[in-house]
Length: 614
Image (cartoon, rainbow, N blue to C red; front, side, top):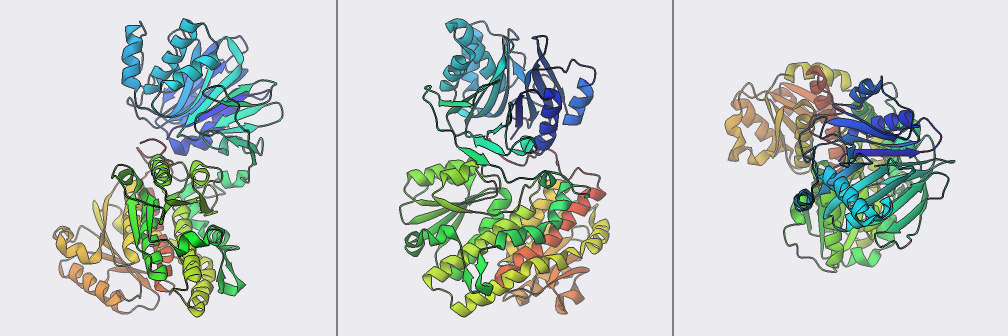
């Protein structure tokens, strides 16, 4: 979940590294550091606790001239955040420096063995173990840095994306990956490496994504060379980046999260474009069209995901079961991989991950493939691991999401799952042509409906002042609104640090109702659907116990408007399309409450955007 950057070329090494760290700071912000081989041939390592801005202050009086460098922004795994535990980590002789994203699972065994051979350790990190191992092999075997890195990685169990430099080798960066993302940018007489392409998109559009088990040799003035751990040449597949700089900037908004909330009309249009055609009469999903027999013969669908993507997966279950009459299970990827899953060739596994690099979801994909299931990926990041590891899939096309709390990626995932369900239903004939056309036309209206919902922002901001100092929240919903309640509660927890619990409204009587009083607000998602009268009953039960209610209702609602303390009205939509509409006021509510509390909504404590370690 850390971010790494590297650069070799004639540009200002330090400035490029720092700018790259700022772009990757959503991946971790416990500490940051740089290591550069200076013009004087020295290996200069500067690192400090806190955010990248702290590092800039620390470096302001340092020697910053350099021929190449690597840098790191950390999300702590082994060892608490501190100057010592910050990366880069260096070898005992001070000749080698490394940055690392991932987790070395057998670090303790390796560390004990190195201590037996006289190595002394300064930090608590697993990363220092790896750089000490590289140094030990380099010195003991009198081999090159490249050979030492390869031999060290053969002894490692775990996940890593690494970049290694050496004082005595000032024109080379060695990089490698296993289960953690790493991209290499190829410029004009310069090369970049990073955890994703955002640090170098303004310098080059040519990018190579390393695959598991690959080692890259980046040398000044030479073409990129990639091999496996046994030194066999690997194919270099150069991709053209579609990112733009404007997508990586706030665009006048105070925070990326608010920008991304307000981008949703546009991102949903991008998600729908080319997929709802002929005025809504046809749904075009290539991953379904190209694998018709798979979906026609599927006996079961299993959705694997984590966090917000899991909430989208729950909605996917309702959508696919309602429209396609196929049984669906939704599993946390972190539990699925250790639950002895039973799969066969008639199962379809749908893996959902915004980044395409979520470690648990990626592991679940590999298990499903090994067991013979057909694996379909839903991701946002072109070229990431999950699209490469799955048999087919669908991008959500919402553009880079920088805010740690997912907003536009969630609605993009839900939209893709809706289109996927419709495409399968169209193939299987489980919905009539008229039903598909009706829903297709309504889907085309969703971006405009979202624009209308976003006009509630001022009202939500005002209401947030009432709820800012609540210590607990209960979010309730039924049917399609239950996953929306879960997602709304998660958003509030993530960025405001207020405890919130999402619950099926009918289950409130089986425990949570004991918590309800005047100091515990209930947020109730209550659009006009086939469960509306049931949710009205739940509203009455909360009011009977003195609870304060904020309700999300369909425009023109009369009944709940008379019962609730506050209401937010959203446009009327078919039941299966309401989650996209009703989730947006909850995103805004979480944002404004967190702002009122003075929280950093883009970088909430202890969280990182992409969970690439277990």
